[in-house]
Image (cartoon, rainbow, N blue to C red; front, side, top):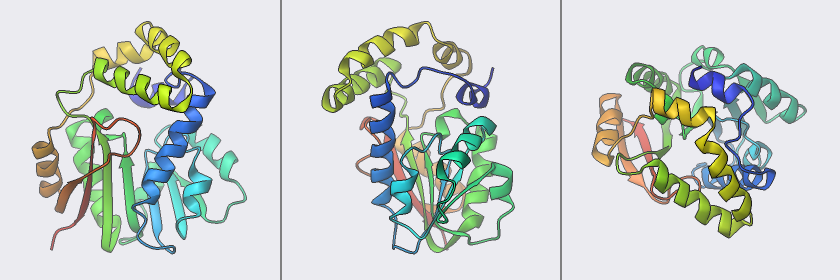
Length: 230
């Protein structure tokens, strides 16, 4: 199993329906802060189930959702059908779009699952797709010092604040015996220091900076904005 197959199948990453709903609502609200203007063309790349897409679409002119998992895309298409502002595309369809198609490109909680070669290829695609003055938002980047234990503590704090602490505790116990834990052990997650992430973005042709707060609940992880370098 690889990460795409994992996310395309049945999994228990979200400890309850409440967890899933508040997670995606938080993501959508956080991304909306970066939308530059009401007519902006936004790409959420590696968007997952994107349960907050309808809300995010209200903050921009056009929202394109893309995920590598076919089953996830099928669910997205069914959920957003009828909303003319939202389009669902495969990664291959995104790569075929013309230069300068987007004012904001979002890659949230994605880089940890990518090899360096895939990451660099995507960076080149995103740079080409950004309109002049557009912004790339790379968020939920995992620093080397943030372990699975610290991720678990962040989830418990989130659960306590959002009313799903009990299910968060039970969900973490289930995770010990889950395919996610095995995949994380077998494949690992890519981690970056702040300096390393800035270097990756610079080599891809961006001028970047770290921004706070991070997108999502885990503030031990990092977010960066990047613009095409002259």
